[in-house]
Image 1 (cartoon, rainbow, N blue to C red):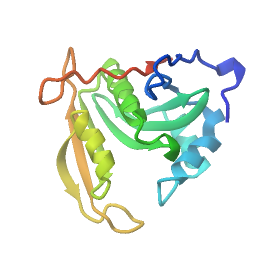
Image 2: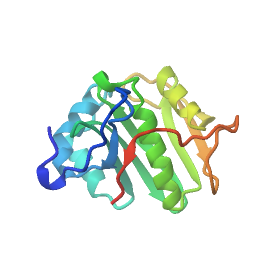
Image 3: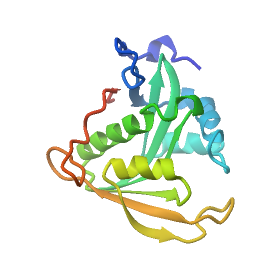
Length: 189
């Protein structure tokens, strides 16, 4: 699905050929319902329905950001923000775009957005077996905070609860490296 002309954001150009350069992170609207379902069904054994995505898009506590490349939605992040806490509910990337920096772009965008929203603590749950996702989150400053036994209803797999505190000022990982080095363009609305 392509972005309709009336909602098409300016897309960054890529002079380097680096896959991170052309990413754009922007809000997702209802016009993307079918594509959200399509992306979710590529990785989620209990894929969300269009109705569930529709409810999230209308929910006042939900923050939904999309990852776009060449005017196409290739990923998304959904989080719920309550006061100074946020929980990342879902993050999905189209399989042909995985491993190219899109997950990092979405997370970095949400970290900036969360700070502007007054969030101090971020949490998420991830399958114990999802090593790639765990590395992504750990690389962005999340640490294991707990274990939820038999959390996933499709196979009874455990989930790790991961947590990150947001500090005021420049965000750094535990080694002191900046976490704001991604080249994705961000659009706030």
